[in-house]
Length: 353
Ligand code: NAD
Ligand code: DAU
Image 1: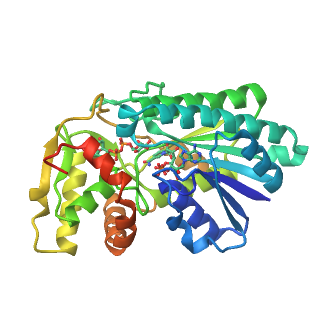
Image 2: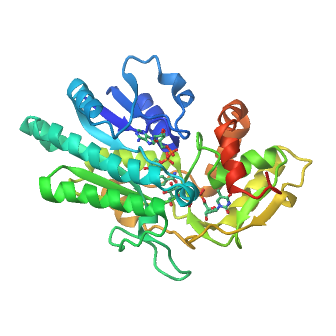
Image 3: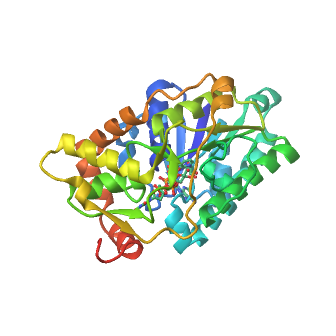
């Protein structure tokens, strides 16, 4: 048997693929469209492995999906492929609806048909693992309890709304057709291979090149950070023991304001590369429209059911992540040319760029 991964050339997907190939004998097929966020360089270390197959393609391409499912007969699909950046969804939401909603719908249709055709033993063991986000639950106030599996859906950005729609589709395909789905709603990830449009790699990249660091609004918005390797470990447990129809809330129990994150990064960079006052680079910029104030996840049920717990503290994970970006400057240089510069010009004030 094998597993089919979508979006495996992106940030979380490539971490998942690399860890899978290092720890499992089972072949893996990676279907990725290679949008601006997908990068085959991430996977150079496995590209010649006979157990690994990369296919460039769109999850919206139904005939490609049917062909891949027939050819590789996967026992599971792990669905990462998505447009994932909130700021881009505010400026250009179309691609989010196309990939996150219609793409997930097309994938479910193809997988459903494939699953119906499997023999009974294999059907029971099959899983469609949908990788979703805590953003579908909206925004918490300062003293609200954390999100969990029972939180109501209140998506606020076009990105969150598109992911919420995909969660509902996944739920419906389980409820109506019996497709053995598992959904993960995870908090903010950080770690190696994250595209430097997201807060943590953006701050590292800009600070170390002496560029100003943009903080939206008052910078007191709160996110709950989880190292990507801990998220991938939770996903592997879901594949192994997740019950059909199950939903798991995943988080790092590491709530930090954006200012705290930025200051921690400036301090770490100051240790690694003394001589520059990185704190002096921080600038407040216009807030994100509709900016969610606080995300936080109560993962205790997930920890009990999956026998999983984060291994990385925020302090250790951030230090490791900083070191990865310092050691992989070439990777950063390659992904911050062309289209990246256009995005920065569009998103940030001229005084910053
Ligand atoms: P990413 O933007 O880094 O990567 C997305 C990948 O999907 C890219 O490789 C891209 O080329 C591919 N892709 C996009 N559209 C596609 C299409 N139509 N067909 C095939 N491939 C396509 O995203 P990420 O941060 O790695 O997130 C992965 C998944 O995890 C997403 O579904 C996201 O919603 C979810 N998630 C992310 C976080 C986070 O903090 N990054 C947290 C929770 C959940
Ligand atoms: O909660 C999970 C979500 O986390 C995922 O579903 C998304 O795919 C992922 O992008 C992430 O969304 P956020 O919007 O929380 O992540 P981002 O890194 O874009 O921003 C984190 C916080 O930092 C947010 O409050 C906005 C703020 N920010 C971000 C950028 C890029 C700034 O203050 N300045 C910036 O330049």
